[in-house]
Amino acid sequence: MSSQETQQSVATVTVLPSARISGQRILADTADARTPIFSAASGERVGWQETASASDVDAAVLAARAAFDGWRGTPAAARGEILKRVAVLAEAGREHLVGLQMRISGKPRLEADTDVSDVIACFSYYAALCAQGAAFQAEIIPLPDDSLAAAQCYEPVGVAALIVPWNFPMVTTAWKLAPALAAGCTIVLKPSEITSPAEHALIDIVAEAGVPDGVVNIVNGGANVGALLTAHPCVDKISFTGSTAAGKQVMRTAAEDMKRLTLELGGKSALIVRQDADVEMAVGLAVGGAFTNAGQMCSATSRILVHDSLYRKFMAAFELAVRALVVAPPDADNAAMGPLISEAHRARVRALLQQGIDSGARVAFSGRIADVAEGGFFMAPVVVAEPSADNILWTDEVFGPVACVKSFRTDEEAVALANGTRYGLVATVVTRNAEMAEHYRMRLRAGLVWVNTPQLIYPQVCWGGLGLSGVGRELGVSGLRSYQELRHVIRPAA
Ligand code: NAD
Image 1 (cartoon, rainbow, N blue to C red):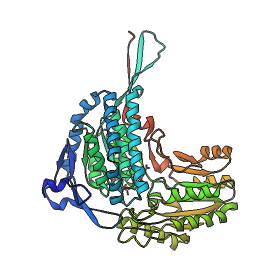
Image 2 (cartoon, protein in one colour; image 1 turned 135 degrees about the vertical axis):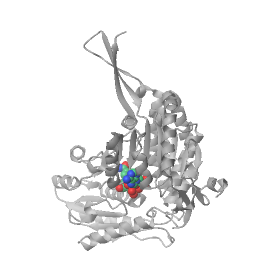
Image 3 (cartoon, helix red, strand yellow; image 1 turned 90 degrees about the horizontal axis):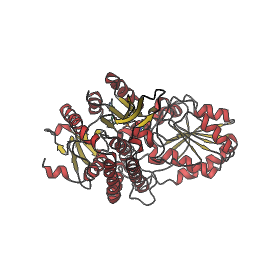
């Protein structure tokens, strides 16, 4: 394989290197270390990625360790300048980044474009925090003894291992990378093995923006490479987004060295439609909450609770909306829902649906796949009515375009149904009653509650869940703090 071949853009066929360490692309010695990358929209192979070896992982972590003192010593304002440049370059490269997400993940243009806007907003936000400076300054702590002075300081944690899934590859990477860089951490990123061209494209921009060599390194591969990275003794912090099952393993590994840990895991979130809801709005929020990104969202509101008095009206309007969804490749006219990410994932989602049906769940209606969708991993949206509370479609994260609707009679019943899960990521409430909206906000076990709004995410507002949905918070000042250690000093007063 020539180096020219490895440099080709994903517009044609790409071979991504096994690792990028201190600015160098590391190529594996053997073609056995390659796995294919597919276009979810066409099913075609569009490239390959090489898999990092144990020694690649070790070299990447050591490179990050070696770069740490220099990067932490760079003033926060200067780090912020570089983050700002990342945002500017991402804006300049928007069309390329959007095209990449459409090509690899099959996202409709609007969704792919929103992802890029989220990346830009995230880097801009942390750039502004760096410029403003307060989050990095020591804070004086008054003591009862005048002869002494105390202060608390926020120091970068050290080397951060960032592990991301495939559903929002650029966004999830930005949510980790921007605050980690702002804090002064150095990084080893392990992209998803399914969508790595997206993460590599973002890292190209980070390098172009002037992040010094060694500060951001990449190792490619799947769970095994992730496991090697999380176990490395020179990693100080792990930020992991993925399934709850893998998150538990990561947590066990982190315990060995007491590594700092942020886990963003699965969900089984509820959307509640009260008796005073605007039904048209509720249907719009249900379609967006259940079928954006083909339902492959940790925050998918796949459990829809509708007040008995509105149930028929809601279901009739929901059916019209779901049947009108154009499920098609991103370049098709009006494409509104893309494919699932892989053949294997589609088989998993279909098997879960069948399991739910076999144990009594009733499909109320489904959408359809557009005729133009050939070869990709498409699946029509499905709505299940009144599953039992122990049906797998009601209890488990499907991570695909399957939504369940259940009716309720009282607010107490709605809250109990919504909270009847060990997950706790998000919830949506649709009501015209502000007092009841606050009642739900307080009682729902979720990291974020949206009231009469779509699933808007701002970098100013933290993201993270309760229970099996994870540990810690991303975004906002808390997201920055998760890459900092709080330390104190006490000394004689000046
Ligand atoms: P996954 O857990 O299979 O993989 C996620 C990432 O972790 C991948 O890069 C994978 O290679 C790596 N990995 C897997 N096992 C590992 C291990 N033992 N040690 C270290 N790394 C390991 O998840 P996925 O299928 O890629 O993504 C879907 C899951 O991610 C869903 O459960 C979804 O809810 C969750 N998710 C959560 C959020 C959130 O913010 N809470 C956001 C997006 C996705």
